[in-house]
Length: 205
View (cartoon, rainbow, N blue to C red):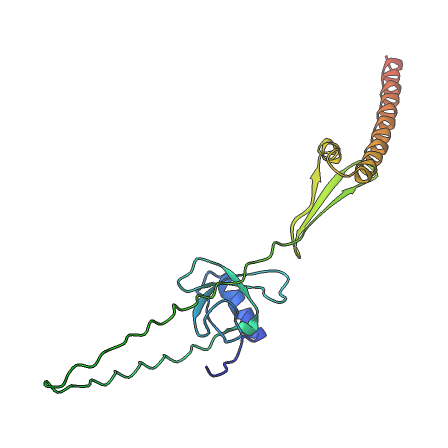
């Protein structure tokens, strides 16, 4: 198969715009594509972030799977139609001639190339505590952030700490205890302010 031009940066951005607008975004696979047949068509369904390596999400024609490819594995150039095979010549044997013995060879079944299995992405979970005792969590799946510093109740953090290694649990417990002391001090301060305000009201008659 002749070498075809792979996707340029401008073509990738145009496809990104078509997908965002809900327009059909058809592509064809080049000889560099892994797990599919060169010249086969597909539809771009999305883009992974960041735009590095295999980040273009494509559903091959006739398949429900969504696979990721790099720009070098895709093209907008439609391949020419494959030429039809020439008909086999018809040999007419004389009527009087004996029919030769025909041996039919059994061809091996074609090998179906399965797409390589996707390796599970690495998951990174980060807990953060402020001096006021507020907790947030951040979650990365591979390079994609799926949870961005969402608030987490301190009670949930305390329960989770019991299932973690002792060193992690102790660090979380220390932070929780310090936050508890600060909150108790704050409560005492508010009580004192409330008492002072009530005395001032009584003095005013």
